[in-house]
Length: 443
Image (cartoon, rainbow, N blue to C red):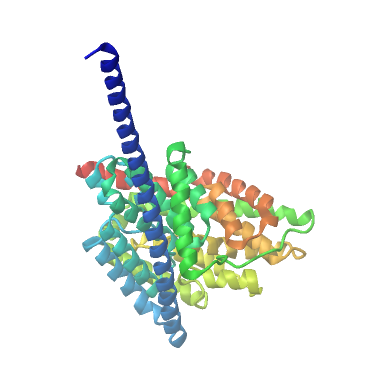
């Protein structure tokens, strides 16, 4: 064979190999995108199912306590005990909000260790036990659990692409926030600011794609809605703007206190008697349930569940919140969180902040109630999660109040800084370290 012929044959062979390599790369990219989109659809559907069932569970408990106001002293402690028993026996690592587990799963590299924090079995248990918590009157939310459910679904779907697991878990968690609140921007921001604490250009497009898929699924099933209704009120004059730093400091300090208590309890008590009590999780859960029931009785039954109905009625309908609502909701949420039952703190935190804002609104008689409640919500939420950008984005999306963007941004930043004075580390990342230590010790 002549040299020109051999050269031409070699050239064709190289071009053919290049085409095959390009096709393999294109196929891998397409498969990866399909996994993220399919997972987003599944997360959106799971979020809708959990939302509908959670509403039914809350309605059932509210119906019970309206018929007999002392029913919570039986149902809530026994329900907490049952929830903790099922968690420890069948659905280990499903306790709490589930966001620390998702953060820890991203940090791990061992697939088996990840599977112990995010899996389909945990997702099923998370849904069932969150509903049980609401059914027995716990001051818990469904949004944090949706994050762990979303991460678990993505982890399961991503078994075919194990190298992408950290990105898949991030997308599933972000899609869970977006679908639970119908807040796509907040889902993306939460994924970047809190779950990963960095902007990853390689996965940013896939995060957006997963969130869009989850959001479209939610819209298709339940339609478009604003979580807390539409609020157009804003601060009117210069004096009203003093509510921004005041709400920021009060809400941030209260959020820091909440986080510090939860982190300290999770880390273990110092006194021997307290450690002995915590070593008996069912008894401890029962006592926490009694505490929630006491708060419910003192509040007239307003602090049970997510607090969504009370806050929306105040923001949209002008129905005033009781003076004690914010404080009692805070205490009830502490009891529910440290008890060990599965359940989130997103909605309860927003409700606590709204209650504190309503209390501070009495100092500003000329200002509308709604804007100061929003300031309280964003300040306390930023104090709890220490994610100020997520805090003001999620409140703006939940109320569609663009007129309050600047005040909410300022209050979120002040709340974050005030919280750091009491609790130097955000609650989710602090709690995730406990799961990381446990998985490292067992491996």
